[in-house]
Length: 228
Figure (cartoon, rainbow, N blue to C red):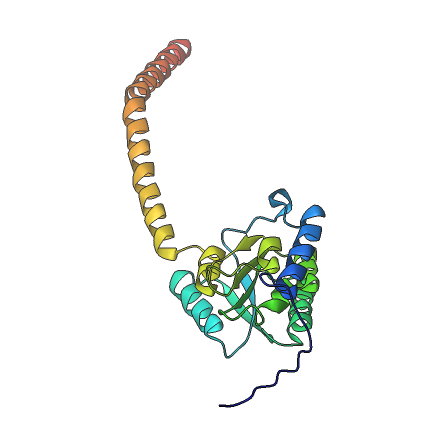
């Protein structure tokens, strides 16, 4: 048999750890200040011309976003802002990227995205500084952080939350196939309406034509009589 010695450095209550408690306290404070209020959130433009993506350049999130937007809507300029998405410097990096995009002032949308991870990995997106930066942004922000079950404080402040990076990209741009189908249907309906309108107005046009001819002929006859 063996002996095991434990040196205890700290003791925490069972259940919610200190980390989760800190997150909940922060969320209550931000909620009371109106940062989560739906009425203050910015609307997303339907046809964006430029989108900045705040994510790691080597991540699957970036690859998913590129592919999704390329498949759906190729008329948009996609700008990667390479950013650390976990670790000690992540929060400052994300905040600086948000500020940089706002300073440039060319983007219609900002996407903040990363793949799934542990609660510790996603912790930077529960910090106050990122939430404040999203709230202060003049450009609408879509988040796609983690998996469907992962809800960070940044997600709650963002204008729209995507359940995944792919979902965030789908929200950001329309589907060109659907647009083409819509325009095609619109064209068919327009032709139908014009045909109906012309057919309804044809009798009136014929009457106008007859009146104009008669009036013209009467005036000519009157003039000829004067000449005679």
